[in-house]
Amino acid sequence: MKLKKNIATSESGFVFNPSSGDSFSLNTIGAEILLQMKESKSSEEIKKDILNRYDVDKSLLEKDWDDFMSQLRDNNLLEF
Amino acid sequence: MSKLKYEGPVIKKMNAGLMNKFGTRTEYQPVKHIEGVAVKDMIAKYGSPLFVLSERQMRNNYQAALRAFKTRYPKVQFAWSYKTHYNNAVCNVYHQEGSWAEVVSGFEYHKALKNGVPGNKIIFNGPDKSIDELNEAIKNDSLIHIDHFDELYALIELSDNLSKKPRVAIRVNMDTGIYPMWDRFGFNYENGTAWNAITKIVASGKLNLVGLHCHIGTYMLAPWAYAIAASKLCDLAWHSKNQLNNPIQYLDLGGGFPSANTLKGAYLPGSDTVPHIEEFAEAISSTIISYGFKPDELPLLILESGRALIDDAGYLLGSVLANKRLSDGRRATIMDFGVNILFTSFWYDHKISPAQDFTHHSEDQVLYGPLCMNIDVVRESVNLPVLNKGDQVVVHKVGAYNMTQWMQFIAMRPNVIMIDMKGENHVIRQKETLQYMEMLEETPQHLKDFKL
Image 1 (cartoon, one colour):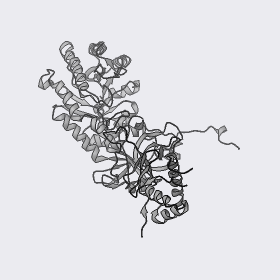
Image 2 (image 1 turned 60 degrees about the vertical axis):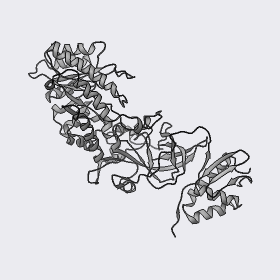
Image 3 (image 1 turned 120 degrees about the vertical axis):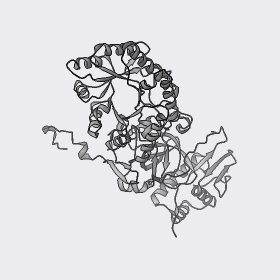
Image 4 (image 1 turned 90 degrees about the vertical axis):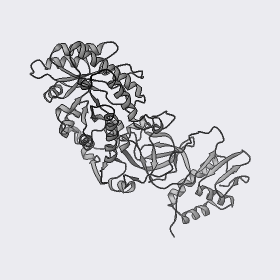
């Protein structure tokens, strides 16, 4: 799961895709995930970090992760 | 160190198209308490889903409605509409406040009697009254509102050998400029059927025509329609007195006043569009007062309001069972309550509030109920914060009709509690059990065993 190289992200959760002109907003955890993806961290590393810091069990995170990735893909933000 | 509160990651595309000037988001604050009682405590104690009724709000609504009419008209009487909510505890709140009972079936009639309402303070409406029920209503001196000629002739026959005349009214239907016109109940005003019924009753000499009744619709948003209705009833009453020498003691304008719920398809929320009960009171009272009756001959004004007195006193608490994403990308949230217990979700876009803290991020979503049935949709599209499995919600304004029209379908019905004036909880209807559900079933002997 790699974010497209030209996607611009901000810490506050603003995302801009210069090739399509689309902009997006993220909630806090979504912004954190995207920033870590931009730093080329692996899925496992990011999930581990979230599990350490947030009050969430692994199965819920897995489910939400898959859902979030499919939303990123649907919005044309991931490399194929 | 305690961990941070988790909320699933959300991405939302920003559209620079047409803006909705009223905004899309409605929920800014969680609703954690009802009448000072914590939602999570109630769910922990009584289970989820759970219906909660506020005795304080019921009494406040009643007193406000009574005040709206009594400050404008000298003789006002409310009669609690049993079909709106016939749980005995609920009925008795309104009876304690002074309401008579308005019933539309033998079942409701007996409920009212059992609650202790004197027979002569029960209004018996509706098209279905058996001969036995009519006899009982006559014996109890109840106010029988005649719906059709078959009932009128049956009553004349039943009264043949009675020393005391039964007290009756007729239900009148009429054109008040409202569509659809409810002409299936009662006798029509415009084509003369209502007057025909009045003359037949008076001419029979066996029935005492004491009242005239109408009920022009439900969830009515037009106070002026009640002014037209009141004027037409006054016209009949006037002629009954002057032509037939039969003064009418009361005019029953029925109910139909709306609550502040939002009807499906409405652009603005109900709280912004629904007229206040004072506007209905003004339309009705000023019409009757100015019609020309002498002050001491003004008829008693009866109102059978149900929904407007209880809808906002009822809440449904529920929990999230699951989340999923639909094929078109929309988020779907599955709740543990559906159309089986929230029947009014067929009519209303109910306001739904999360019962715990949430961030300002929200997502358009569909709210489904738990039934394995495609029709089980609580909200087709609602913008709500992201709800996790197990999160709790409060559905507002569910007090009217849900706890009478609910279905025991697929699942059993939940506990209903009432928060009293002191903030104490009382279970007023226990949740159903398998044993209760099977109480009336009988399995023939040859069907009791099988081998698989």
